[in-house]
Length: 523
Image 1 (cartoon, rainbow, N blue to C red):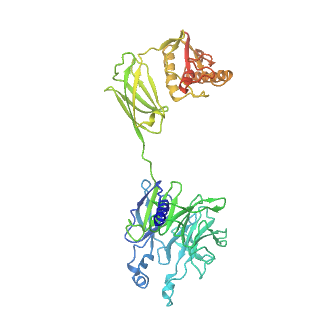
Image 2: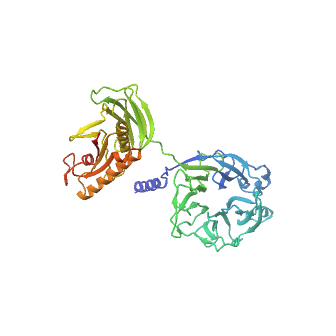
Image 3: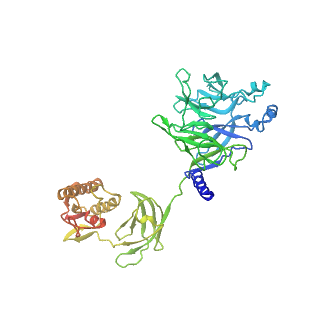
């Protein structure tokens, strides 16, 4: 029985500590041996954060309070975000009256930065008291912010009460809602998350508990709402890895959904909280007291992992198709679509390129007095880590006799099934036709287009006519006189193999029939 229970425990533990491998997490450079936490975005490149670096003036108060209470004395600092690494750098003290001992680290600005919401803990008044209470309740305040970031018109929120605390304000990105934390008596547990509507006159609606998808009988703290209305918060009540974990909840059909654990590396076995995110780049910050920190609590940055670039090597040789001898001084060009990526001239009878795994490329081999060769490196062939190609070049013969007809010699020009669109590989061959027609200004040609036997006869005639017209239109667009070229669609009337109606043929065999030929009718 004990063995069975152990197996079940390990199974669920494995689920809980499963990793979110999409993110990279770093301990930011701004962290010190003190407490550094609570990032607030001012824009995409500048943030505020709180720190207890300055503590020498606070000895009297800290002596009368519980251990480590000196961490409550905070100052705010600016920091810059490194766009590449996501790290925080170039700290500068934030010169504002927010740097006083009345504030927690919890602050939130409206979208226009003209109003700030913050937590006030009133511990100067608490210090004067002689009763047994160590702290008074926490309250939420709002204030206007002037151009120097000084606070004016400081007002308490209407739902503050001496019977409970309210803290950790977070204004929604549209400025219409305020989320916060409270231990008021109508909650599900110790501290719950609540929301109020921000009214046009600056007032607020009655607090609404976010419900059991979010709140538990324990603590839910530090809300953050992104531009997509996704709620992030910390909890020690939902299933997690230990201490406070960070969770998210999507807002669908007017309701927050069941909270989801963000998993490692965002969460750890200790406390992880104060999560913020720039949803445009899926990067942000959170605070943690995990083991690898520099001080009491540290600020960590996270950003999406950049997938390792997958590349493959393509190597090969170029041979004379008649003699099978290697051809030096051959130019090999690598294309992605119609874009030239790289070009090399062979001096050692072989070539080599590095290519991306997920792209289809074209190799074009050319040499004086030889026909160009175009080779597709299609998706199927790029599944191999290393590709080897032998390319054969034919000595130049600009014309060829096929079926007792004199034609311009080209590599096959194929079309995709049911398509008349000119492909990037076809453009290379059509440019050869243009070059020959410019070289021989008296020749006239008929562009004959053919289909495979699939689809009806009438449809194939129509399709081949469209393909022939697309081909002729391209050649004319390159400066050839329209009187020198005409088009004709043959449909499936001139198949080059056995693939007639209902015949069992491979796709490659069908493709041989989807071709374009250039027949010379006048020289």
